[in-house]
Image 1: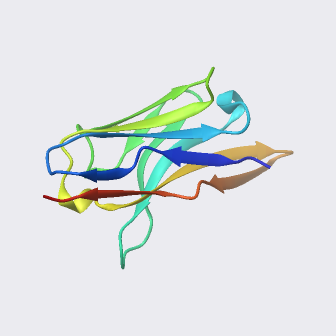
Image 2 (image 1 turned 135 degrees about the horizontal axis):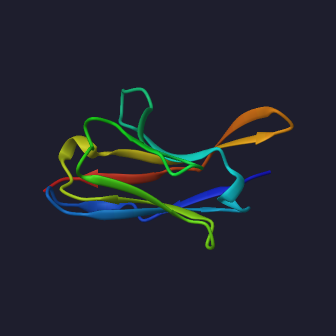
Length: 119
């Protein structure tokens, strides 16, 4: 069973930066993709940034140019650098991994970390 543990959330002023990290309990080298999702109160969970095993990235339009996703295959971590944060970035951020075992692809989720952007 894969476990994902997020860290790095907190309270930051508008225009500030935060870096989220997600530590996986197994080697991420073989994962199909890893990414970050977020869910604000009263809204559906949305994709923020995805990084595939081939190195391709996909960002939500609302975060392009401000957020950067990266991974460390040695430390088995994926990070999200968030710059120029806005109040509308406030949400619980979840780490996700898509992993295929025996031809079946499953989603694994972390417990979430709160990001609050407020003055």
